[in-house]
Image (cartoon, rainbow, N blue to C red):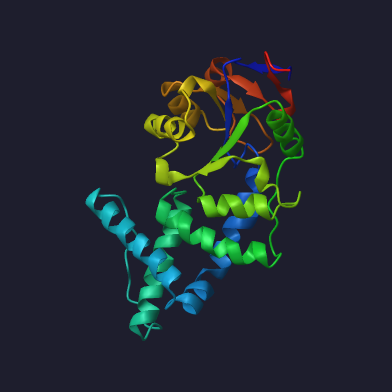
Length: 261
């Protein structure tokens, strides 16, 4: 694909992670299976610790909200192998987490627990964050040209920092000026992008958002942001209408910062 210019008024770039800076396969094939494989052990080991208690409290609040909204929730069946209240509680939490993951939920409660579990995997070296090879050199160049660069992902801020702090490129956290997650709002809600602009301290039209998801692009555009859709291997295929509606890039290196030395 050819080079794509971003508006001269742009002062900040806002980047999605999955499918934009990082292969979808890293999330689907490495991060998510790690949660499924280690969830029971994590809960059993840390059940009485404050951090785990907070995670479970958030999950229970999410269940209550889902029930109020009449959303489907896992039905608890009697398991004859469970003998104690703690084992029963852990099993119920596991059922809910597995259900949310199967439904590809982006709830803050789920993302917080996942972030805490991934922390152990990253810090022990069992997992290293994958980043497309064009990302780091491009972000460095943008920053040299005076751009601010932020991350906005449905993964928790902690999970974001782990990915970039323990990446295949080493610790690249200093390349980013800030991080946003679903605590500021859902990525398909235009109000979230208005809040981000306010938090950054600039006008929405001064931000260019890079994502692989057209629904997120639409929400950002409605808030007044400039948008580029990122086309990477394994990303969801775009419709002809989506391809025609947005500027597309396959690599960060295609971005041209107009009007900047």
